[in-house]
Amino acid sequence: MNKEEIFSVITQNAKEIVPDLDSHEFQWDDKLVDLGANSMDRADIVMMTLESMDMNIPLVEIAKASNIGELAALLHEKQ
Amino acid sequence: MSMSVGIEAMNLFGASAYLDVMELARHRDLDKNRFENLLMKQKAVALPDEDPITFGVNAAKPIVDALTSEDKDRIELLITCSESGIDFGKSMSTYIHQYLGLNRNCRMFELKQACYSGTAGLQMAVGFILSQASPGAKALVIASDISRFVVTEGGDALTEDWSYFEPSAGAGAMALLVSDTPAVFSLDVGASGYYGYEVMDTCRPVPDSESGDADLSLMSYLDCCENSFLEYQRRVDGVNYADSFQYLSFHTPFGGMVKGAHRLMMRKIVKAKPSDIEQDFEARVKPGLAYCQRVGNIMGGTIFLSLASAIDNGDYSTPRRIGCFSYGSGCCSEFYSGVVTRDSQNAQSSLQIEKGLDRRYQLSVEEYEELFKGNHEVRFGTRNVELDHDLIPGVSETWKGTPRLLLNAINEYHREYSWVS
Image (cartoon, rainbow over all chains, first blue to last red):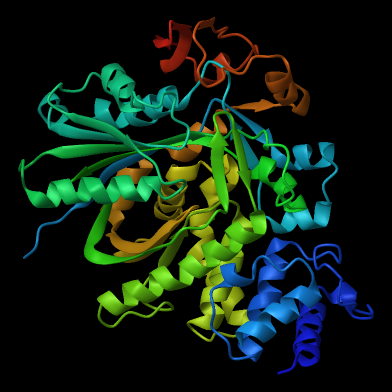
């Protein structure tokens, strides 16, 4: 997957976990925490994204991503 | 046949006072809906004349008192497990040994590895029993902690979720008598998956405070939950996460985190559907959460608090296997298991843990805040202090008739306690 596709998978999962985001226009520098996702929600979004990318890496390796764009870049790098 | 080993008796001391965390959340202006998802109800609060030593003694006292003097003298190992030590050299086990009146022919020491310490203590005690170096000997393992809720200032790694740490941080002790007559929890010997690595998630880098990155800690907890089970599965034939354990006990920082970890395991390992996951949570996990929701996170003892809750609140009409996941930041983790019978449940219920929780004094938010503002806290390294047992009138009324160990004073660093009824 390229970065844009990964970004899209993350935002789809974010909408599924936080239904309020259904009509949100996601930006690369959006922080999930600012969008109302608590730490458990964020972990769920990351795990669902890893599943759809068929990736199995330790979650702690991607915990440092501070916004959705960084998360997409990190996942792109490690896939 | 291999010998039995495990927990002969287990008891909680969940403090003398507690705070309703919904009241705290309102006071701190935390989002109500988000807060409800965390599945917290009460947090135990240590008063200034209580410390991890009084907690440990008060937890162990009913267990020790129920032993014959011969059996009591067979306690040859006393391990305190804590991240709230009161001295860098002297172990809290020495005071606890004194106030429980144990045999002097007893090994005493303290160990730490954040919230994994209780499991580390249990497994060391189990190793001592299994070694048969002193056949018939017993071990007392006491996991006791008091939260230091003042977050260290500075640094930008602290996430806003750290404000959710305060309501989850409890205080309390679990005492476990470990022996070759495991009346309460018969450990599956060798059935252990341990997993750990270096990570800076949460820690106590200075004496009276805690620091951490809530996101990193959650991720690490989830990584360990999966990998410790996979190692357990590799070592034990014919195991599967869905059927091998009728109950699951988790290290429970707060209920919502356990719910998330269970969801991860069911989705990833069992490939279960969301509706089945919810049902499984209610059936296998919830019995173990009840006590945790009333005490908060007591660090090393939390896994046993969850285990005691699962034993008291489960159905043991036939013997059941409980799977236990222990995690301590830093980090080390372990998945292990044991068997509980109807007799085990009867033995456990005789300690009336729930009744003890019901008897506690409910603090108002104002009383709670006054405890920390009014310079009442006994800080690490205090050289001399006298404690007031009536700081909050009404607390001692809740345990009238049952003597309780309290801290009277610190005299040239030496802690002086007495039984107050």
